[in-house]
Image (cartoon, rainbow, N blue to C red; front, side, top):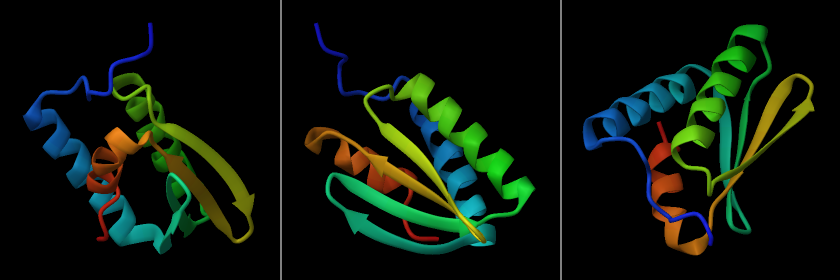
Amino acid sequence: MSEPIACRLTAEAQKGRREEAAALMERSLHSREPIEGGLRLRFRGDPATDRELRELVRRERECCPFFDFSFEEAAPELVLEARAPAEARGLLDELFASA
């Protein structure tokens, strides 16, 4: 049986997560572009951003296991590719809405 396409967080927790992601993007996001099935986000590659982004992704994998995240280190940036099934694309877009 496949994983249901639904976030496991409460509405209040989802709002907090979106605010957390928005604050990180406001501080460190260089660019955001659509890719097939998701987004490519380029962040400043400093250690603090790296830790914060990886922790955000770790927690997102717990509540939304249908998201697919991959990292690429492209000095001086950290690149995150985030993908979701078509029916969950709105959740992904909400999480990484432009800052």
